[in-house]
Image (cartoon, rainbow, N blue to C red; front, side, top):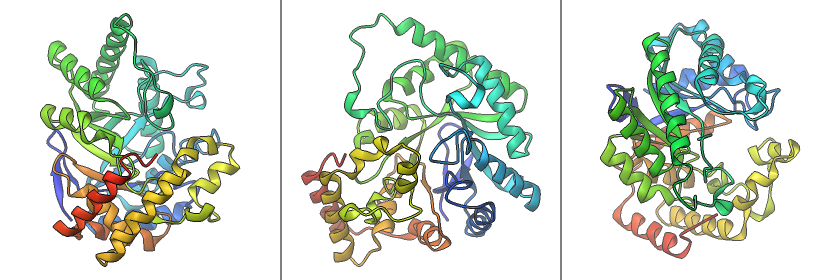
Length: 355
């Protein structure tokens, strides 16, 4: 296993991070235990979760993944071996809020809830799941996102960010969390949090967790630059584009038990529709041809493409089977040749925006 420093913190995290969001929906507790056991055996010391999980997110599955991880800690007694990351998730069923936001009250309640479910006294990395003080362009929001027309709302946004940092400081001072991070944020949001921390002597955001993969490379520019120059670790989620890059959804297929099939059952298919467009499918086929040409497993090639980036700290993998997990973790040792990278770039030029 390879390791890297997480932003400006002292934490050394594995370049492969174990994603957990399927546990409690697509995976049972026993299967989650098997995945954690194997990941630790392979040197993975970084686990990522959220109070929102399992997915697809519903009131019934809320908190189930954290509960499974907590039961594993209780069973295995290996809390100190894991750098544990979780998130505060502003959804109505988390705290019964009609218009859920991230603020001092929600952070305090969310931390207490996570600690109880995780059966631990502290969280190594506590993250904001997505911005609530302004619109964001992540998840399915990209195509309809509108930037502010002017700076009229800036003061309120800054006040909200300052309240969040002050609330997180209270939790750090209480010993309940060690480091803090963001998720699904922009270059502007990242730099504002960094500057506010400097100005007010508050805890510094050490990471952001954003979606990045062969079909979605938007962060290679502004966000990557902000992270590199501000010493904010970049954590990749959905490196296989929610499984699209595996090819399992080609030709309109929805394998039984897959994430998309469960989303349809839960009435959440709209969020995934753009990922299933012809452009994304054509790009996936082209990348699969590159993998075949170079004798690579498609999923390992896609993962290795992210892991090799110097500005990237760790790639979060998710698996529903042990076979997938073993293959994904092994991708840390896959080397992409210059010729392979050239072929990947050729496909990227043809399909710069997969979805």
